[in-house]
Image (tube, rainbow, N blue to C red):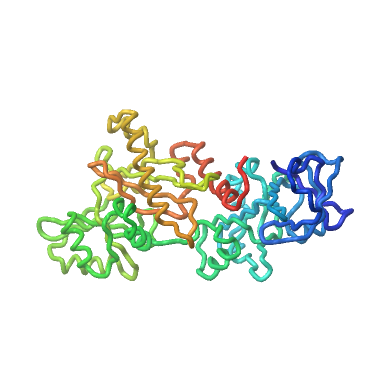
Amino acid sequence: MLYNITRDKNSKDQLIVPENFMKGTKFFKKSSFNIKAAGKVAKIELIKSQKLENNQILLSGNVLDQLMIPEGIDYQILVEKDCIRIGPVIGLLMTSTKSRMSKGTLAKLMSYTLIYPEVGGLLVAFSTDCIDFENNTVQGYYYDNNFTGRGLPWVSGTFPIPESIFSRTMLSNDIMDKLKEETNNHIFNSHFFNKWEFWNKLSKNKEAVVYLPETKLYSNFKDVEELVEKYGAAYMKPLNGTLSRGLYKVIKLEEGYGIKPKQGEDIITFYSSEDAAAYIKEEVVKNYKYIVQQAINPLRVKGRHLDFRVIMQKNETLDWQCTGIIALIGSRGDICSNWGITAYFEDVFYERFNFTQEQIFKLKREIVGACKTICEALESPKENYGDLGLDVVVDEEYNIWILEANKRHYHTVPLWINDVQTFYQTKANPIKYAAAQVGFHVY
């Protein structure tokens, strides 16, 4: 149940509740309790009133000030032994600096509030530079579900460090460690790994490694030669590249090697390994770090690369779920999908590969199972993830390969196929998970 909390100016250290509050429980054997909102605690006396509506609660002004939470919005209230918890207090850590918390940014964050009526609580958007660890507070904007003024329903203020945080920005190890401590590791996605860290960690997991292409951290041309000789071709990818930037394909030719950039350019031919090595060093790698990866022969649609973005998220079940799968078809001549054409997963296999509904269901189940294995293998007692976009390829033998897990994947990808429902679910699930992982409900 959600309660609307109002400031009571005529009392001190009191929580005034309706007559039927927690009716039928043993909670009222005592009248004095601790009340908590995230990391802030106050001492209160519990008072029953016949004058209040079932969802109405009064809280003394001095207690609201101690807890640093606003009045007039809807909260859940949990009773735990001798403590009352108000919440959930959920943080959206979206940017590194306050200057980026513009009206435009806040407008984009409105999509996270669509689930609010099912969760309630204090939803705070803030930036890294507005965290005050000394006072355990953040400066930011909270979502006011009862806002009636002009403009956006985000209200500035100072609040307790949220007890559950969804992070979409890079954090230093020091700040991440402090937030893990403050939230009891309820910050997700907690670690921003690069392509090599992703492969290196998962390659040690027996269940996960079967879905990974063979990969090396580039040190010299010998790394490229070994994979090209073994598989006929290999990809070179920058450790931190996105959207296929800096991607090259190295191909074994009858005489020498061919190197092809990402988009539609002709293959550059080298008749000696020395020339190919020099080109890669001077024109490809330069001062960046790269991986070399086994080239997979993907399924193709009219000769174009086909791969998939699989959205894996946790929700109120605290377990990994597949929110959606979007098919990505590359432009003609490209060495990857390059986000060319998008389509529904089911439509591609039904229309282009003549799959039956049963075959589509079976393949989808296998892909989701593989992705869930990867997501579970990434986690550890120190790392918490809840929102990942996995890049998946199905090869010509219908084997499943996981290329990468994106920590800040584009939530708008479902809109590329006009799938509004999946888009809304993609935005809702992180809020559901944020609430549930600290013990609150999704109604």
